[in-house]
Picture 1 (cartoon, helix red, strand yellow):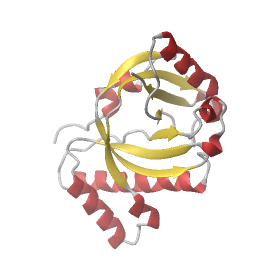
Picture 2 (cartoon, helix red, strand yellow; picture 1 turned 180 degrees about the vertical axis):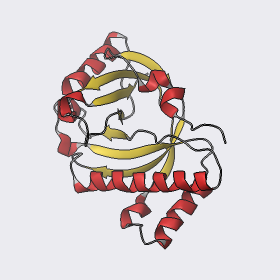
Picture 3 (cartoon, helix red, strand yellow; picture 1 turned 135 degrees about the vertical axis):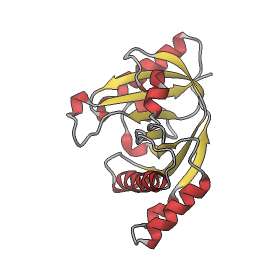
Picture 4 (cartoon, helix red, strand yellow; picture 1 turned 90 degrees about the horizontal axis):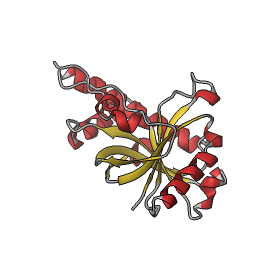
Length: 202
């Protein structure tokens, strides 16, 4: 069986950006998602992360047992939006709406996902939130991207710098603010957390 697929190595420019805002073209990717609203520390957000990881890890082991292509776990990603765009720059986190998501590789089918969820249910490991999982393809295209290093609560200035860069390039902000978490907050000091920030533009 070939080596593991590692999406971060395949698309290095998208997962190892610089700390200066710049433009990138992002291809269409498919995700498992759970939607919600509120601060990242909320029970709903943490629960969404748990059900996504339990599902994808279970699917990873299922595919490996079937001697199919194995993969390195993709990083957690989120989409954020608010009725008031200023809520991002001002860090009014309780107003943020979100979709927590994990990328699904091309060889993973809808049948694989359904089989994984059914297996979790049969083992008594499924929760009501597992029923909220959905799949969707994300077509973002052109985006402003930057690497942010630091605690999640301090992203406001970096988000402002992204918006200012877009304005300087004559671009308009469209779509939802996108974050990719490269660090494990359970093992990394807040000041060293690495997060990719993206904002679609046109």
